[in-house]
Length: 354
Ligand SMILES: *Cc1c(COP(=O)(O)O)cnc(C)c1O
Image 1 (cartoon, protein in one colour):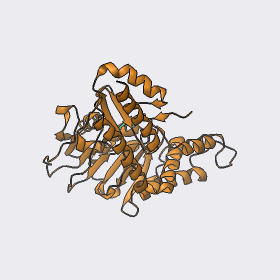
Image 2 (cartoon, protein in one colour):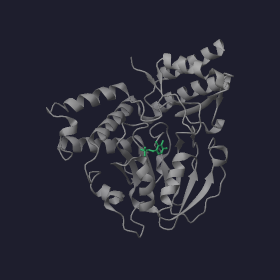
Image 3 (cartoon, protein in one colour):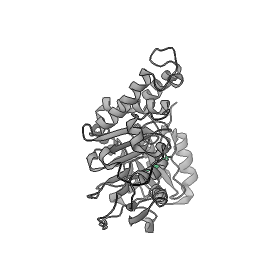
Image 4 (cartoon, helix red, strand yellow):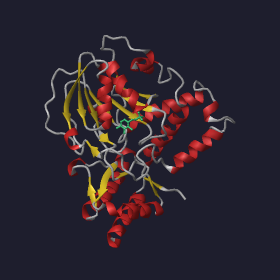
């Protein structure tokens, strides 16, 4: 039986996407060949790449607005470096909201000055900083929209008169936003879009080409744009599976439709966390993530009982990250409301038992 998969990443994908992806590995579109053994330059795969790029822009509402979508490799972690390579001339700004922001800052420092304009490190990143000043002479400001490990999410984004860059690895395509407020968005596929191995980069073309350094080809967004995201062999399986997920999302009604379900899932788990005296939420209430709910047990002595209860109920991937401890329920797009219901039932059953 399929488990209720709360894994933080790589994560759950729609079952029908898994089905189609596995069929394509055996025989892609009746070609008598596998998806992973045909040329990436074949017209069949070029069509897959083009559809994945077009669906990304369409779902984000960025068609015809000067943006390009790329499917690159190296994960979100390589984007930490690529963003700085392509955009950092003298001084950049970063809001430090967790482990991933800190890693992005570390890479950018290799290439230029980084101002940490705000940080929530003082409280182990359990909140999103507000009301901070932003210098007006930055090359760009970098944010992390959803902090996968700590379970916080930015609800309102600062306005700037320079490029706004956002790591959306763990909440892209999960909620409606005015995506045109961002000049570059990146997301490793394995949180909400596909298997590991590809990274979506959506970039406004007119912010590129302004730094004086020479950029290695593989790290140059302009090179990837000029080659239609096929500068070198792309990860064909990851791009294809991501495309299937984007198609699934479009058929469901797009981001507006999935957001409704995501809100229901978040409401269900957070109301249980708040009402059940055995659990404490980790993130500050107004900054809670709809994707990753972090919580701890009020009495450590109940750990073994709770752990065996959720495991017996067919739940997977609930253990929290070591830097927070406790539990983390990741509720990405493909996780159903029913699965969250199963978890919440176990939590209230623990209260009855204890
Ligand atoms: C997982 C994650 C990353 C790292 O992604 P990789 O693809 O493994 O490099 C970066 N940022 C956020 C917000 C993440 O959740």
